[in-house]
Length: 347
Image (cartoon, rainbow, N blue to C red; front, side, top):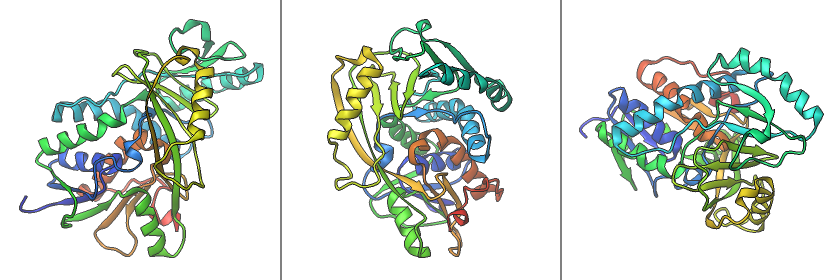
């Protein structure tokens, strides 16, 4: 490649998605990953793409909503360009409700979903008896069923994005590579540490998560969310479950008894999974910015350098909107990064 318009450093979902969107728009792109695609938290397994509660609406919730709305077209474009599937499907989500108070609170949020989701998804409070496979245990007999939530297979997204970028003439470099053009740093936990060192203050940190893949074919049953637990059926006949959130840890890439506890709780939540074998276990550290929102935009004091980091637990769901926002900035000079998402907001 003779001349590069955009160099992206980092082969996680943020870096790959930004590179893809820039390449899709005609930019000459080079992506550099020092070790392997999905080496950090983007190598996980869960892939839940879900909205925030539709109340106390703010810029973060709006941004994630917009990302969920465009996700179908975004991931279909990736699949069509590169010929590899992403596992995306808008399967919805069930959330068990503990008691009458929880049912009434959930019903009070129906109006918020109508107001903020603009018909792109619905929020229902319904009997769990209306659902089959993976239907969760719920003391009240009721669940929230939202139709906006979706899923994508994290381990399919990386290869699909690489294939799509290459199909558009983009360059993927594993190991060392030279920066040319605008440089986007999408380097996860290591990038947060580098930013913290550069500015002399903590702009974010890493939070360990553990999850697993179970052998169970749930088809397109809705995913389940309850008490921090995620149950996500995938198109390859597996169910991904997780996760932990660990601020203090000794072994960032090792699973332990905390995942065993998650599995016990998951099997109690969804009895259909009681006998499902564990096919794989995963542990990794997710990048969390100090604002808990993605960190986007220009790197202060470093001309021509930009940041796309801080996906934390919602990186896969945020990736399409992160990609379009960064491409707008890099290729068109259009800055519509929400307040609270800028690098300056963490300083």
